[in-house]
Amino acid sequence: MTGGVSDALSEPLYLRPEDGALDRDPLRLVTPAKRFSLEPLALLLDGLPFEAEFPPESPWEGVVRHRPPLDLPPLGSTDDAALGEEFAAAVSRSLGDAESAVVLLSGGMDSWAVFSHAWRQTQREGRRLSAVVWNLRDQFGKATASLVHRQLQAVGISCDLHVLPAEWHALPEPLWSPLGPRHDYYTRLHQATVDHATGIGASVLLSGQGGDEVLGAWNHLSASLARGRRWRDLRSYLTSFSQADSLVEVAGEAAALAARRLPSHLSFQLYVATALRDVVNSGRPSVLTGGYRESVKGWTEGWLADRFASFGEAGGDWTTASLRDSIFPWAYDAHPLGAPIRQRSPFVDEHFVRYAFGLPPATRFRAEGPYPYQWYKALHLRLLPAALRPMLPGYKQSYSDAFRRYVLDVLPEGPTLIEELGLIQPLDRLDLERVHPRLPIVVRNVDQWVAGALEAGAEPVSAH
Image (cartoon, rainbow, N blue to C red; front, side, top):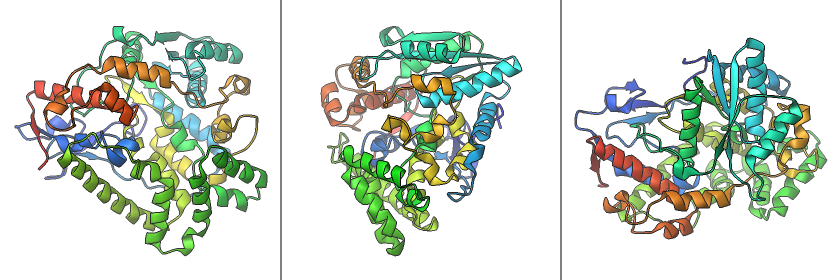
C-alpha cells in the first residue's frame, strides 16, 4: 500500500521469471548487460494490442510486466445503492494522506465525479485541492476552459484553476523512464500538469481515467434489461446501435441471448467476431517489417487462447466477457509511465473495480434525458451534483482537430530511429496518419524511448 490505495492497478510492477524476483524498477532486475527487445515494442504499433490500446509490455530482456489477476465477483453480486459511498471511499484512498492534491478536470462526467467528491472531502478535512484544465477545443469549437469555468460557477465552487493552453511547442518533454514507452498521447501537456502540481506542493494527481471502462454501459445488456422488464430502456439501447450504423452490435446482442446454448468454442468465436471485430480484424496495413508482423500475430494468437480459457471459466457469459475486456488489461497501466508524481484515479482503485464489476449490468444504462450519450453513463450521473447536470456536454467530446495538429507537430520529419533499427517500414508522418490517426504519436513515443535506452547504454535485440 502507498498513499492509502492499493498499488495493484496504480503502480507498475516487474517480474524476473528466472527467480520470481519482483521490483518497481525493471533495471534492478536485468542482468549487468542491459538489453531490450524490439519485439515487445512492436506490440504498441500494430494489430490487436495497438487497436485495443493495450499497455506496454516490458521491453527488457528477462523481465516481464507483472499483472496479478484480480478476484472479480459475479455480475449482480454488489448493491448499486452503495455507489456513492463506495466511490467516496475510492476517492479517499486515492487522496491518501496528501495535504495538497490536483485534479485534471476536462468538463466531462468522469473527471467531475472525481473532482466533486474530492472537493467535499478536502474541504471537510482542511486540505487543499486545485484543478488543471487543458484548454483544447472540441469538435464544435468549444473551449474546455470556458466550459469548466461555467460549471464551477453553476455548482458554487471557487478553487485554484490552472489553465494550460494547447501550445505544446513551448512545453517540456517528459524525461525518459526505464519503465517503458509512454502510452499516453499529449505527453507535453501531461508533463506541464505534473510540473504545475509539484510546483504548488501537491503530492498526488487525480484524474477520471477509467470512468467509461469501469462504470459505463457496454455491449450485451439486452438480457439484463429484459429481465428487469425495462422495455423502454431496451428499445432505446438497441435503437442507438442501429442509429449509429452498428448493426453488427445488434446482431451481437441477439447472438449473446443464444450463446449459452452453443459449444464454448463456437460461442467465443461469435463473441470475438462481434464484440472484438474492430481490434482483431481492423483491416489496416501493417507498418511493421516482416519478422515483427509475425511476432505480433503470434502474440495475438496466444492472447486469444488465454482469453478463451478465461471465457470458459466465466461460463461463456458475453456480458461478463464484454465488461472484462473493457477494463483489462488497460486498467493495470491507466496512468502515463514514469511520471514523477503519484497518479491515481478512483475509478481504477482496486476495491472500486471489484465493486463496480459486480454491479447488476442493467444499472449501467437508463434512457433518461434528451442526450443518448448520457444514457450510457447512468451511474456517472448519480455521482454528480444536481446543479451540474444542465452544464454537462450532451455528446462525447472529441478533440480530433487539436490531436491532428499535435501529431503532425511533434513527429519530426525524416527517418526515425526505429525505422533504422528495422522495426517499421520507411513511412513519413502523413503515411503513418493515413494508416491510423494515433500512429504518428505512438511511433514517436516508441522512438523516444529507444533513443533514451540507447543513451543509457542499453543494447537493442532484434526479432529472431
